[in-house]
Image (cartoon, rainbow, N blue to C red; front, side, top):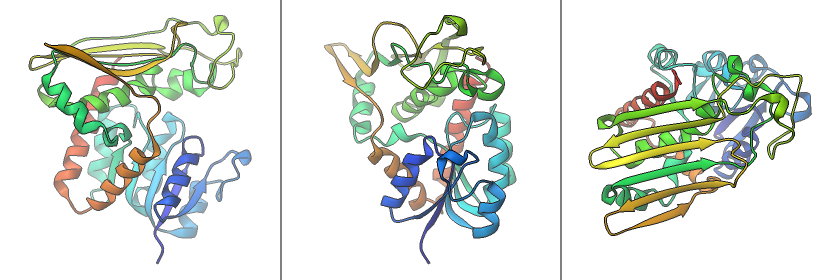
Length: 295
């Protein structure tokens, strides 16, 4: 029998479709948008037709993640849910507890970059680590669900900050650190946004979410600063910097390569029977949820 995967949502899911196919999966797609040319237009059609998939990926608007997860979790061995997961850590934990026979994880692709071991070595030597994801003009589809709190739960704090928290979890003992400072601010009003590098502007929509967020942690002797900005009108800067007693080093991060996503998928599949691996995934996912759920 061929390995099968169901990709739900063909935004980021379009890439998952290609990556999973390269890994040898027969990939089915589901999206309610008729313009996406998906195999199925509803979850019910997809699961009733195929009954069981080796992997299901959910990459739909944030407020739909939880309902779709409950509707699909018993139809797969591995459920991958796009960041930022659910509305809060309680909702996430409830899903995991309710379905112990399915392995469930939030997407944490950056932990699987080939440089991650080098980053960890440098972090262990550093007095300060700074992770930045600042954009000159990249508010996603202003006026859409991305910028509507009721549907996205937050702005840049739910979009980019989970990636940065994922780095923090991978590069240090995150459970022993102390959060010193956190702020999430809305710095832009919809009527003043004329354009964006990501999508189009709908001035009849809503923009009531944070577009700047900053978190600061202390972990042992190392200070950590995580900062994300959808629009600073200055310059794009996606980087990680390590300040050490004898100097500093900075790496441009850019968009995560497909190899990292595929490595994440392969590692999850290889560890399907490893309870320790999934306990660690749960602890990280709960911790990340807790960092952003009250911003």
